[in-house]
Image (cartoon, rainbow, N blue to C red; front, side, top):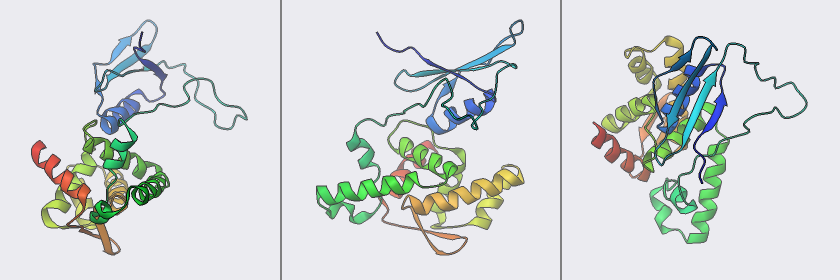
Length: 221
């Protein structure tokens, strides 16, 4: 016996589908709609066999965070990269990590995981997606890919240049500004770049993560 899928009621069906497809590499079927019941849904499938059913009806009650007790329904989902060792392998950020003892490296990895957990929510989601991509379990966010391609090609990246690249896609001004801000935080946090001055990043040439991404992005090109 195994769990076939997990179902989630969604206020914004398209936004939730985009979240799981973009950040976790899910593949969605065509939208199902029952006009009689006013019911719509997507099935989102992931590598390894896991599935989500995302569902919506117009009469769905919104969650009320002001209630003093836990809301009924799904509490959380956990996506796995495999073993603890697999996660650690993709958090080797500094070139000097290989010189550390096992105990010191484990302490350092724990500290890095706590640092990533303290990032703003949207930046943290991109960090999770980046690690999952390196581990081979998810498609890379299009916003992250654009920033990485620019950084890896020239060795530097400015917020102005990234914003202009997003606008040329074309993304809206608001989306371009917010995504630019998130990536300018993400890349230093992941040890891919350093920030010599505000609004400017420089590639860390011996970054293990940068080298892994250079290979992966090159293969996908």
